[in-house]
Length: 364
Image 1 (cartoon, rainbow, N blue to C red):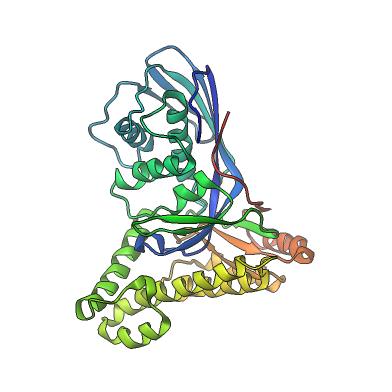
Image 2 (image 1 turned 90 degrees about the vertical axis):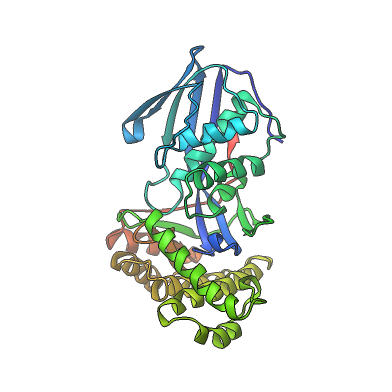
């Protein structure tokens, strides 16, 4: 449970996130394994006793003033401040005074580590902390409201992985189906490295296209075999049913089943004590190959950085985020970390750094 406050000062922190397994799975209601990393947004709010929120975002040279009474009957695309206010009010969170707010972040933007979702989680957390609501405030509740604000309100194609990972923190196995469930499967993962490509990722258009193709492929099978369930499908099912699908849709059907299988295998690696990091790395490589060869979401620079990391001795590496650019995540043996960091930096990465696992959103 998270308490509300009448304090004149509120500080909220929300981390970035990395999807380790299950990219392009959560919008199909399939499981993912993701983790919160120690890159974060910090929202610092001071009560101003006016009837508006004065928001300063110096990292992106942006300022905004929002009346606490603004209903936002019409939403502008990607206006998450507005959609979060709409959602919060639905749960009895009614602003009654203004705050002057500064938002700073060291989460890379358009890099596949959910800087936008971290902002939404931090903003929702602030609203609930400052003004309360008609329900018990927990990290899961914050995550749900952030999901509604970012995805449902904007009719966006994403799933719930980002908001839940950021709000809850650590390493999570998340069943993203309608009856959402999750469990913490770890609080640290040594040797995790993030390398930014410097190429902005594509999100909305790419997610929408891949989601549409995957669902279309699954529906082709379900029309002929109504009992088919993607959540229990195996590679044997792919061999059996792929002939029912138009050739241009088979890669998406394959990717859905194969990545689901990889995620289940990875869970077994995380359930060992200590983690089976060699298996986890091997499965990261397999996951990346599906994302590259079947979903075709990589770009040459991403593939180059992957090869550099593997050639320098990484257990595994994969693209992070929706694709079209962004970053890669690397799992490195302790004795190879320095060499991998240097190799990536020397061969075109914009930035390279270790990313320890961290807890979810916090307030003070």
